[in-house]
Image (tube, rainbow over the protein chains, first blue to last red):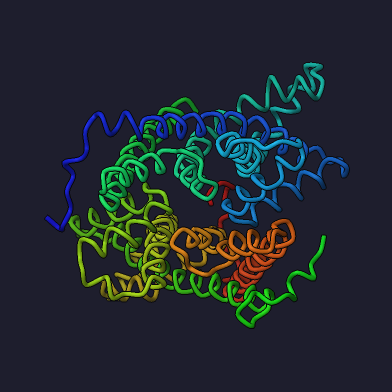
Length: 222
Length: 238
C-alpha cells in the first residue's frame, strides 16, 4: 500500500541502529530537564531579586536565548565550546550542554511565574518565623512554586523531548538519526520517518496523558 | 571579527551580503506563509473543538491537534518532504517551499487551535446565550460574538506562537531551503568565518522576532476593548 514496505523492521535493525539513538534522546531529555530546571530556577531567583547587578544579566540571558531559534543555538555552542575549552568535543556532549543552557531560559520563565504565584502572606509568614531569605525560598516559596508549576514544567519537558530531534543539525546520534541511519542501510529511507514519527507520537501522547492525570490530582490537593 | 567577508563575492557574481538578504527573505516568506496557513487551520480546528452538538467534528479536531502537536517539527518536515511524495506521487510536482509551508503551518495550527479553544472557553456562557437570544445562527454567533472576543483574549499567547513560528522556520535548513540557518551553515563553512556569519544571522533572527512582537503589540493596542483585560500567558513553549 502507498509504495511503502515495512518488512525491514526487525529487532536486529532496531537494536543495531535505533536503540543507541533512542537511549541518547532519553538521556538528553532527562539531563536537560534536571539541569535546565536547576539553572532556570537560579535565573528566576536572579530576576526576582530586585538587585540590578543580578536582574540585568539574567534578563539578557533569558530574553536573548528566547529570541533566537534553537537550531542556531545548537550551532553556536558546537562552534564556541571547543574554542573556549581548547579541544574538540563530540556532538552529543555539545548537544547536552546546549540543551541545559537553552532550556534553562524557558524553565526560568516558568519558575518565575510559579514563584510570583505564591501568595505574599506565605513570604511574610516565613519572615515572621525568623527565616532568612534563603531559608524562606528553600522551605516555603520554592516547594510550593514547584508543585504549582509541575504540570507546566512537564509539558515543557515534552516539548524538550521533541526538540532533541534538532541535534540533527550537528549530526549527533539521536533517535531520529538512528532511524535515518537504519533506513539508509536497509534502503528504506522514507519508511523510517513514519516509524520515527510513530515513536515520538506514542511517547509524547502518553506523557501528555500522564501530565493531565497529575494535573487533576494536584488540583484536588489544592 | 572581520565582517568585510560579507562584501566578498560568493563566486557567482553576488556578494555574501546580497545572499544574506535573500536568505532573510526566504525565512520571512516561509514564516509568513506558514503563519497564514496556521491561523486559518488553527481557527477552524479550534472553533470545531468548541462547537455545540457536533461530536464527530469535535473529535476530528481533537485528533488533528494531537497528531500535529505530538510529532517533532523536524520529523514533520521530513514526512512532508520525503514520505508524502512517495505515497502520493502527485506531490512530486509540488515545490519544496510549499511542502515546508504545509509542514510548519499544520504544526503551528495545532498550537493555535489550542489557544483559540481556550480563548473561546474563557468567555462567559452568557455571550453565547445572548447571541442565541438575538436569533443568530451558530455561524453568526461565532463570527460576530465569540471569535472577536476570543481572539482579543488570546492575543498575548498568539504573539508568542507567531514568534515561535518564525524561530521554527529555521528547521527548513534540513530540506535545503535557502533560508537564514541554511545560509549560516553553508556560508560559515565556505568562508571559514562562522563566528561572523552566525552573528549576523542571529541578529537578523532576533530583529525579526522583535518586529513580530512589536507588530502584535500594535494589533493588541488597536483592538483593545475598553474595560476588558486580556489574559497574560505563562512562559514555556517554543
